[in-house]
Length: 125
Image (cartoon, rainbow, N blue to C red; front, side, top):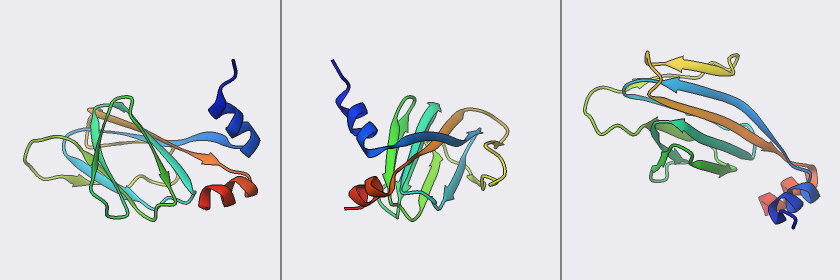
């Protein structure tokens, strides 16, 4: 039996790429402007809140994956329910993996899906 989603991806000529990630400890937040249409985020450890283009934040736990389609700005922060000041950090563009906040309570891995020109038009529609 074939994988229907895999077949669609083959027809659309998509390729997944793991491009960045970070480990963070304590209270933190970060944000970025995706430079690709389809951005992927997955939580490998801990939990996060993710918001895109100012929408309400969604809580993600270990193993959760979010696909962001055409977002202009993505905010990510720890999902800790404790008080205290959050540290804001920016992931340096020249580093594939970054450590912030002096710990690894949370680990997030990001990637994107490369689309052929025809697939990009279809996803955009």
